[in-house]
Image 1 (tube, helix red, strand yellow):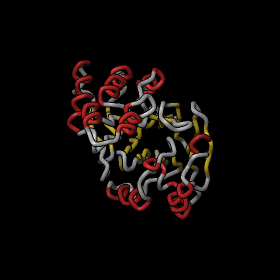
Image 2 (tube, helix red, strand yellow):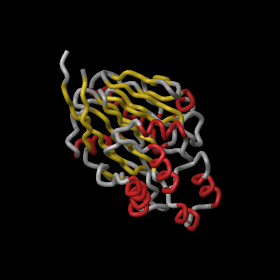
Image 3 (cartoon, rainbow, N blue to C red):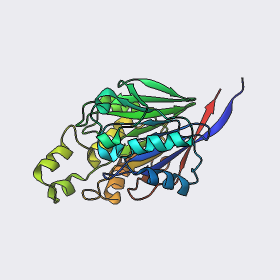
Image 4 (cartoon, rainbow, N blue to C red):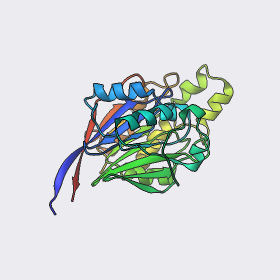
Length: 274
């Protein structure tokens, strides 16, 4: 058996309150994490990034909110037309609460903590605190590389910090600036939901989680799920870079901000496999 290296491509196709979707693959197998934008947009944005022929062997769903599952029904049929039916992995709590139009063919149930094999990729889900019955975040392992997509959680947890510490590339929620949220136009009940323990991470909470989960493995960080009304890229970056500067690693980690209306260029993670 011989050792060989391979690049894993990670492409954040959309990130924000209006839709989320991330692609992870190495040219031989790949997955989508969430599908909260239209199927046409998923395919269009993959094409814009040179990934029009990228394999999609599974779709990993975090929870049932529309900005994460809106396209699941249409996408499942579109992917089946490309070849074999594609499994949509999700928890029973998520599956039982999907909007009718978002129910895909080929639902495969997982429990938080499970790892599923997708071709030669391993996809691992773990629980997060959010206001849905059974939400999870996902890590995808390709050889010795690990990519994490960790969004839609109301507070940092020890488990999430541990999972973050094992990532080479992390897509991490920096949803809102607390002052902007509190002084903004949202109704009181919505502000309370967002800032609650099962809502979304503020820049400060995300920075704290980043500090707790920062390890020498992390080489690329994407600030994700930014609110267009209650945050700015500049404020999110200031919070993240404060942690990285404080640890003396700001020059060692590439930091990007996810976009709602367009994809980020693919990011590469080097992996080795036996």
